[in-house]
Length: 407
Ligand SMILES: Cc1ncc(COP(=O)(O)O)c(C=O)c1O
Image 1 (cartoon, rainbow, N blue to C red):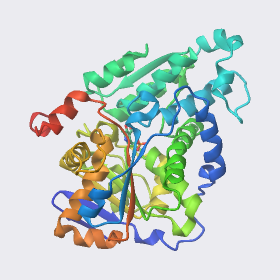
Image 2 (cartoon, helix red, strand yellow):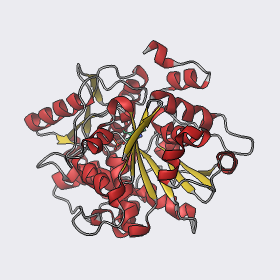
Image 3 (cartoon, rainbow, N blue to C red):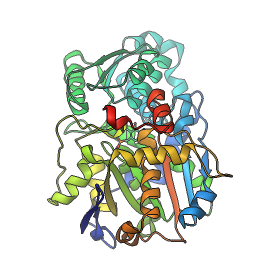
């Protein structure tokens, strides 16, 4: 069921196909909900669908039918997809705190001048490895509430500044991402602040669910942009698994048993989903320690229980990758074949393209490509979930330096 090759490891989750009943409902990710979330986003300033880039020449070069990449570096001018989840969840939480109706949620209603004073009394708090915190700080600033953001040890100065520029109170704590989540949780409880986190725990499910639902706008746009070209394969990068879990649930709702082959991709040192699948007792497995990887957005050791249940019971493949795979993806997207469009993609954004490139260019991975049923009829959908959110690292990697030597 699982095998390894050159540092990469994979787990083929064969039992999910043809499995009926007895698995978590995906109803919270129906097309109806997706349309409602997109209606909300249309009311958020600077909302515009991000481009879906068709890499025709790369597809031909790699021997597949199509490769399409959703370029999230353009999302709300923030460089990453995360504001889709943060804007929906934070608006929902503020509306709830003010006793406003949360169905038919509208950004404009929250900006009503009569609410200004009340909103300014609210503080929201979150933990982040960069992009989510930036998105929360951005939205808090627009709404006029305060934001407190905790980052793990080792966070890059660029990512720190990106959050501070929106007026949030940011600190780097002495611990990893999961420690930062726990600290934010503690302070939210003590101070009655709004905790805007993308990972659930018993008694705290509503906000993470809204974050996940917020991501549906990206999938909704992508399928609309693809028209009749339904994807046969989707690869999704995974940190806590809110993004990939939402994507998988949305596809399961939309296509049922005819959904695309779905692959979850993680960094080796933070592969909590892959490790949980290999353990095979149906429970999420926690990875502790520094979770060192250049893929900062994916450096999470504890699966979000909401994402875990969905991916465990619906996703086809789980792959853990070394950092070099992300670097390959950044370089291939940043230096496209003639005629293909360039995509500026950061470490966490590019890992899925790097993986695709590696397994289709090396015969040694034939058992994996066979298991995935990847061939000249495959139409692949990827998400470049961030641009150069750490510009210095991006420049180094694109210019051929290997940052792993200095890590
Ligand atoms: C750029 C980027 N891609 C993907 C992810 C993964 O999302 P999730 O943590 O929901 O799995 C993150 C998370 O921070 C991210 O920043």
